[in-house]
Amino acid sequence: MINFYEVNETNKMIEKENLDVRTITLGISLLDCIDSDLETLRNNIYTKIKETAKDLVATGEEIEKEFGIPIVNKRISVTPIALIGGAACKSPEDFAKIAETLDTVAKEVGVNFLGGYSALVAKGMTKADEMLIKSIPLALSKTERVCSSINLGSTKTGINMDAVKLMGEIVKETAEYTKDNGSMGCAKLVVFCNAPDDNPFMAGAFHGVTEADKIINVGVSGPGVVKTALEKVRGENFEVLCETIKKTAFKVTRVGQLVAKEASRMLGIPFGIIDLSLAPTPAIGDSVADILKEIGVEHPGAPGTTAALALLNDQVKKGGVMASSYVGGLSGAFIPVSEDQGMIDAVNAGALTLDKLEAMTCVCSVGLDMIAIPGDTKPSTISGIIADEMAIGMVNQKTTAVRIIPVIGKGVGETVEFGGLLGYAPVMPVNRFACDNFVNRGGRIPAPIHSFKN
Image (cartoon, rainbow, N blue to C red; front, side, top):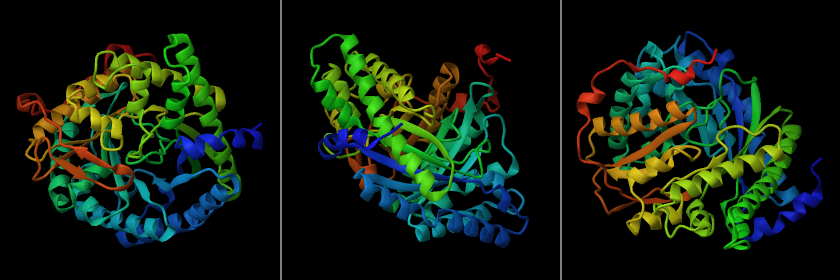
């Protein structure tokens, strides 16, 4: 039973250590909105979201006041739009019109982001999937709050290399469409392997077809809390280190459980999962990189970094599952570059490279996240980076993702400003050798042998 004593115990974490509930995300199924007429479909989508989410922001603000727990974002995720628009959309431009409808209703209900402009193409693409993917540059250039995600592979099905090749081109095209805004469109676009159906974090959130009609998922974050706890056991052995992380993660998750249950009760919508992800922000003291430094590496990227991150991720998950029976989403440690001042410092110091980040993604919760690269990077190179990350997820039976931003007009050493939680990023160098012949083969990389467990 969660009680006010536990909430009071977190006051110091909230006031001094940047503890917050990063997001309350309302998942909404749009399956009952499907229609063969585009305008009817758009109206159905608008009405369903407006009615379901009308009290979301006010409820989050009321919980903030009642418990004194900051809730940074209120968000919506919807059924992948490739599934919803297939009967009505005859062109990529038709799909982009749905994106505009999503953006309009997101603004009206007051959420900061809406995820689900998505397609699931791990094994193959339908015509609707392909049209949605080709509409992404236009859709993200015409909207402010819509986020897009594409699942390109899974441990069960392998990697759809046709989709990987296409997404390299789409990422580059999205960068071009939004070049006047630091290629910002790419910050709202992520590609996945093994994407979860219940992730509340953007840009990858969508409402999976296995979910109920509507659901409340909550994402909690507390890198500063973990770092402060580790400062108290500096120099102790690994057993003490691990126990400290685990106990701290337990407390943070309990806060999220309280908020989720209260939001569920007030909105009359079932509670889904708690996502305990150490998601950093650009704020000083809210950094996963600083935790890694506290564990003992001089900078992220130094020898030992991957082991330290593996330890951190595992203990966070262990603490979370003890605190709630419904831990889901991604849950672990995020390592975005632009959103973590410590990661930015490591890049600027020369300690952290794209290759080392890729190695770290083998043990983190997501993958290559919010990384700025030179604007003249070839689409095939972007596809190669995506393929590498999809392979890590497929073989290791974990979620991996790529959110990479080729910043048009900028080169290595320059910086790009995104603002807000997205922060700013130094443009990182990319391996200059080509992979065109690999990417252009076409077809599908088969699933690994250990995936056959039926």
